[in-house]
Amino acid sequence: MESKTARLTILIDPVKKKAFDELCLAQDLTPSQVIRQMIREYLERHHVDYPTKAVARTPKPNNK
Image 1 (spheres, one colour):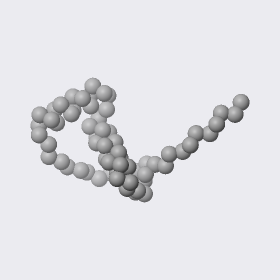
Image 2 (cartoon, rainbow, N blue to C red; image 1 turned 135 degrees about the vertical axis):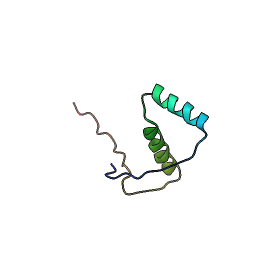
Image 3 (cartoon, rainbow, N blue to C red; image 1 turned 60 degrees about the vertical axis):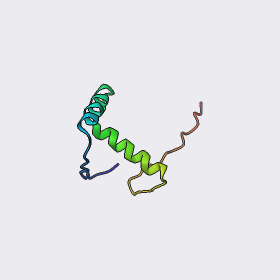
Image 4 (spheres, rainbow, N blue to C red; image 1 turned 30 degrees about the horizontal axis):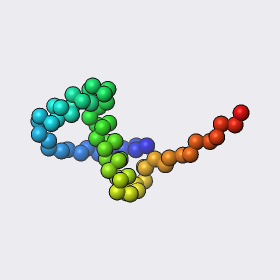
């Protein structure tokens, strides 16, 4: 996981921002959480690797 943060400032139509904020609140998420997820998905879709990218692990079989 990332240890430091950087600020990303964007300009957005106030009506869209209000709708986005309300949707995030309804889903019990912060706008920052949603934007970070969007960025991770965008990087993944374009096959971009970066140092803090989480590596998916294959679950171990359940030996009983």
